Image (cartoon, rainbow over all chains, first blue to last red; front, side, top):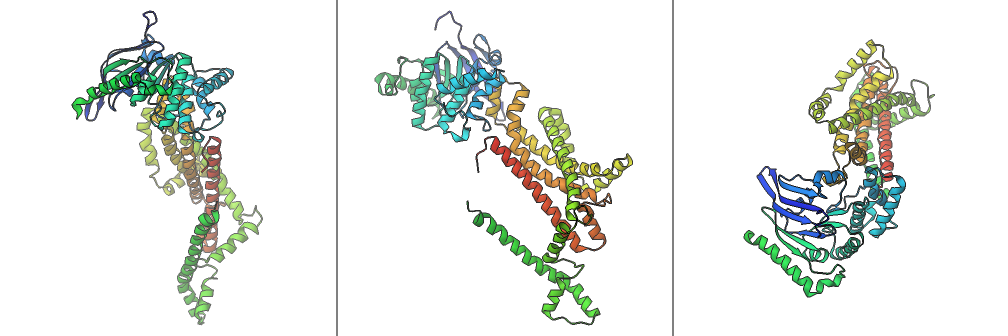
Length: 263
Length: 292
């Protein structure tokens, strides 16, 4: 991170309390975090640690109740209005009545791009996620992994520099997930996007990230931030190296520390 | 696939059962009157003669299936189509007001649903009235609509169609409110991340998501429209239509006529529901629906 470019995401004493029927629930408490341009940051933690909530706050899908959040130097709302980020949900969330190419075109239609511009971007992003040839298919005709790739293409189509991914591969099997992780890294290397990635898998977080934010629940907070020392070029078998295992062990320790009072 | 074993056989078995039961009931219900006739004519019938007679009375309490079938066939195929005894003619009269009322009802239902989904005040103020409107017996409302409209010079097709509208807008409203609210939170969140306007969310998400709900409710609505049209023909003293046939049959104790008008009405209803169902399937397929 250089001091010249402003942080892509900056959270300052961020807190969010949900009012539920069982009383207030503190989903996020005192989160301080700065994410620079081009980083790949994973949020990892047990369920209820607020990792998804934090991502939704960045996306302006939830409003913080205390502290401040800025995205690209703006408020989260302004950033959303400027379409600063692409969001990938846990499920592919494709519209079943649209073909793959029309699904990718959805944000482009909403943003009012010309038909030719749309066609060019659809082709480019579907190439990027290796879905060329499936343009005219409907979502149900594709496997779960392919559907999720289509949803990534949709998030990439309008060239936002920030990609917010909420456990995008959580519902997929191990082999597909490995494959998509590899592809995602390649995509990140080629596009120089900033990626915020929520996961509950330690290997996934270590394999993908330049930085791992370990979170713990009740109240949801950041308990550790781990800088990865792995090189940018990462073949899948890097996961067998001592360096990788050392980082994974640190993440596991961080998760355990956050959990200790729970048992 | 195996439509014969899975569809034709079960449906036919029930049909055969119904026909058998119908004959049994026809014999039982027509026997007292037949005994009465025999006594006056000083005749005694054997059991088999009695059965034969009960199934061939001109004005039976319960006409036998073959009597209804013959009457239906004669009045459908052997009469000129413009004769007012033709069931085709009468069915067409009823069908035209059904379709007009159904079109109005569907449009009205959609408009109300869009309002309810988008304006919170309408949701709270209008919905209870819409539900209340359907608790009023249509038989009580129908004559008033006919009389009031006749007083202002509107007669004929429109008043009948309005009764159909009254019955058919409700299922469409309820179905479309549900359909327009059916998009998942995730899809709505997605539109929110694109900073989509309300109109864009409506046209690109809510409307396509509501289409299956629309067709399901239209199936109910078109059947209700037909009932509305028939009910609308009763108090008008209408000279034509399935309702008029039913009423005339009742006046002159033409029980066979009543039953064959009933059959005609059922066939029209089945055809209408089928047409809407096929339209729904065609639209579903065009929208990428998975073949069942």
